[in-house]
Structure formats: C-alpha cells, structure tokens
Image (cartoon, helix red, strand yellow):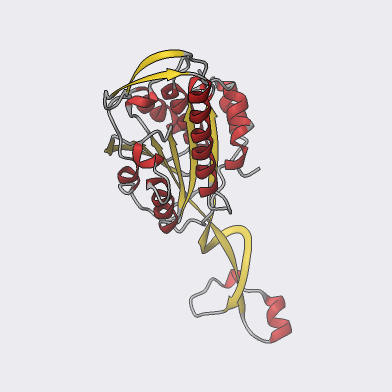
Length: 292
C-alpha cells in the first residue's frame, strides 16, 4: 500500500503535456489563451479597451507606436485515466488489478496536486466515471472510487476510449494488460486505431502496460488445461521450451509494437511488472511521463 511518504515524494513531479490547455478554468498549466500571469508571452498593438497598465512605454519611445505586453495565462488541464477492469486483470501472485489501482492513484495524485482536472473511468462502465478538481484535498475521493472497482467480465477498449468526455487537449492514461483479441491483431489493429483517435482529440497517450511477473517470465512446465478468465474458453497445452519460446517471441513483438506506437513524441509507453518494487516502478520506470 502506498503511504503518505510516497505521496510527499510524488508531489515534486508533474505530468508532461503535449498540448497547451484552452479551458477557462484556473490551474497550473500554460494556456494558448493570453492572460495576466507573470510569464511574458509577446507584444501586440494596442487596441481600444486594453489595460493601460500593460502598455510598454519603452517600445513606444522607440517605435512611436502603442504596444501592450501579453502573458501566458494559467489554465487547468485535463487528465483522463482509464482502467481496464476486465477479468484478465485479476491475475497474478501480485495481481495486475492491485498494481492498476496503485498506478491510477499515483497519476491521479499528480493531476490533482498540479491543479489539473481529473477524469477517472472504469472501462466496463464508462457512464459512471469520476470527475475531480480542486487540488490534492480531493484525493480521498479518488481512493474511495478506486477501492470500489470490481475486476470481472470483458471490456471493449477502443469503444471505451471513444466515450471519454472531450474537454480540450490533455493527457489520456490507459492502464491495462492489453490482452484483448482486438488489441493483439497484427497490422492496423484496434491499438493503432486507438492511438490515432487520441491524436485526433489532441490527447497525449500514456500507455501503462500492466502484466503479471508470471506472464513476463513463464516457468510452467508440463501439460495444462488453460481456461480464459473472460470467455471461459478452454485450451489444452503442453508447456515446453519450444512453446515458451514462441510465447515470449509473440509477447516481445506485442511490446515493441506498442512502444513504437508511442514513439516520436506522440506519447509514452511503460511496461509495468507486478513484481517490480512499487517505488522503483513509479519513480524510475515512469520518468518518461513526467516533466523533470
């Protein structure tokens, strides 16, 4: 469980954004709109009604024209966090579900601590999300919401992403094992379509690929009857060196494809191992999602 010392350390960080906010709410992000914050942006010619206190008399003395100083306005950004609550996430000696909640709580704390607006979603029930703002004092509401999550059934990730409330540019964080048939297809699968849609919506995608240590490092040997936790489909399989080798090869291809989808500054991909120490995972592995 993450403690107060953990969150105190986390408070020194800030989520990286790829687009400036355009919302009319106060916060800590620099907006595309001009305002009255202390950070200078540009000059423009004086227009009737402009605040005379923003007039730059030095420029007037040089050019004999009236110019006013413009500043970047502080605005509230949007951080959307979608959690895969399908049955496959409830797996592992250290479950993917528990790690998913820890990751979601960390990102949520960062958003609120930096005065961003937070939108939390359960991928199986997009109509009952949680919208929170007002700083870190609202964080207990997040913990209460996460505590009530139930991991079962199936989730349609692409459909879920398309149901996000679109309130301008921001960051969209997806926490999932991505072990969904439509995500595993080769070529232009739902994963690529998902990233394309987020880019269209001016969202910086943060992909937290959450897998159990048992899925990353297979040690099973012998004959098994495997049961799909979501569809209950059964499969008889003999786990030997060849089978494990093929599995690890396909898993490697999946991770590389997901990483490439976020390359070129489009977003960030982080493999999150349930066996990894939480502090090392969040403060070291997730450094790519922070402004440092």
